[in-house]
Structure formats: C-alpha cells, structure tokens
Length: 192
Image 1 (cartoon, one colour):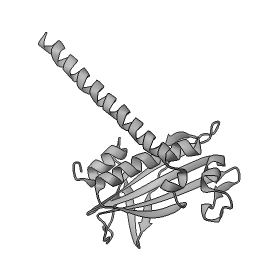
Image 2: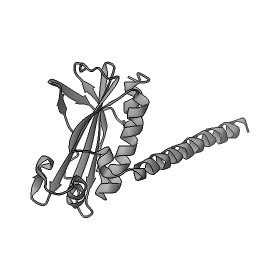
Image 3: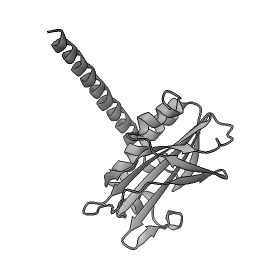
C-alpha cells in the first residue's frame, strides 16, 4: 500500500509539472500575440542585450512561438548546444544573437537582399530556421529550430557545428535531450 501511495504522489508531481508547463506556454503565446513579427525580429540577424538571464529566457521562449506561428510550418528539428570557446567581452549581463535562414524551391534565400517583408518571405519559403546564441557570464549556448513546409522532409539531421561571434569561433557540443530549459540551466550553472 505504501508503494501505491508513492506512485500516486509521483504521478501527481508530474501532472502538476505538466499543467505548469502548459500554462507557461499559453502565457508565452499570449505575449507573442500582443506584438507583430517585427517587434521580435527587426531584421534577419540582430543582437540584443538583456539585464537579466530571466528576461533573455522569456524572450527566447516567446520569440520561438512567434516565429513558429508566423512561418506557418511544422517544427521539424532543432537542438540546443553548449558553445565551446572563449567567452565574448560584453558590457551587458546577457547578450543574445539571433539569425534566420530560409530555403526556397531554388535553394538558399539571401534574407539580407529581399524586397518583401521578412515575415512574408519566411512564410513562403520551403524551410525556415531560427538560431539564438545566448552568452551569460563565462558560458554560451545555441538554440535552434528548423521549420519545414508540409510535404517536405529533411534528408539529414545535421546541426550547426560552429559559430563565429565577435571574432571568436565557438564549436558546438549537443548534449542529449537539451532544449531551451536545459540550455538556460547550463547558463545559470545549475547543470554542467
């Protein structure tokens, strides 16, 4: 009987955690709906500074939801990685770099040379991806998400192997099971 009580308690904990996650995602979706695409993505690549890691965490979560809704494609793959390299010299507590990529029927679309709104080009593309590089104290992570139009599939599951930021090159290490939560846990030094 004691064992059944323990199992019920464990199930209750997981269901409460699941409810909290759903409520948090709804909160992020509501924030995403309050602003237009350009509010989150003023250009195909940009830098942004945050005074706290919590604000950067919220921005990444909300921006990912806004991106997914705007491109109107299925999230097909994407992982979070540790960035291995020298920490960048920043005056800001948290630095975030964001860049997007799109592919059309004829291959790579140069988003810096488009003559339509960015959101429209991403929506009309076959694949659209977004990558965040987040630096906090002496650590950095990359968080990527790849979206594909219906009827298409990726032929490989390759991820970015390195990034260059402020003249530094960062190799990527993709721990198994990492997403936004674990990436920010790593930045906060809650996990290694």
